[in-house]
Amino acid sequence: MTGRHDHTSLGGAGRQFPTTEWTRMLDHPQREVILAELCRAYWKPVYCYLRSMGFSNEQAKDLTQGFFTEKILGKEFVQKADRTKGRFRSFLLRSVRNYAISVQRTGKPQESLDDNQSVHPAPTDPETEFNRAWADKVLHEVLDELERECRQRNKTTHWRVFHDWLLEPEIGGRKKTMSDLCAEYGLADASTAYHMIENIKRRFRTILRSHLSPLAGPDADVEPEILEFIEIFSRGAAGT
View 1: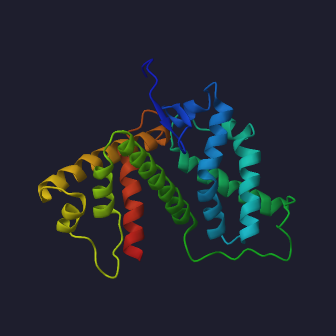
View 2: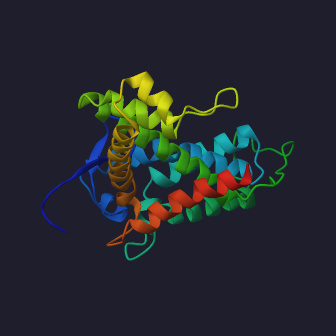
């Protein structure tokens, strides 16, 4: 590690933290702020995981809130973090699963965990639901940051061409052609449009890397995280 501090956001705009391995974040002077941000960033994935385990809407909400309040913001999460290996999401999933099992076994009071609400396992794998929710959130955050950057750098047309070509859904069974985009945005030819798209795709990959690298694990290559991110969306597309 060098003494230089790059900065990346673990969440929305305006929340900037040093880029480093997730276990080292726990030793950072801003640890409490970082942990609170992790709660915000992972609330929905954890909730989806618990829902897929078979908990009702209210049960899953109560368990999610209890998990983040007691485990993440408490001391136990930090104390049990494996500082030699492992990705943040893997550690988080183990912690959530263990917490849910513990609550069920001990009958720990929860507002909506009562005898009248049984747990019915969902047909979808809980880890798959967690990963889908996580990847979807990361994608939206990366695209939001990319759009802001394009507008700040006077590349709004670049963004619109990129968005319309790669992100815009088909309307009435028809998707815009490259000729449509050139005419709409006053571009000289398709080559110009493709060049603009490639330019923004490179920035997308760079921003995606900055979002994923803090959670890859100590001295880990971020490439496996990126490949898994892509695979999650590929599996989702194959299942539709």
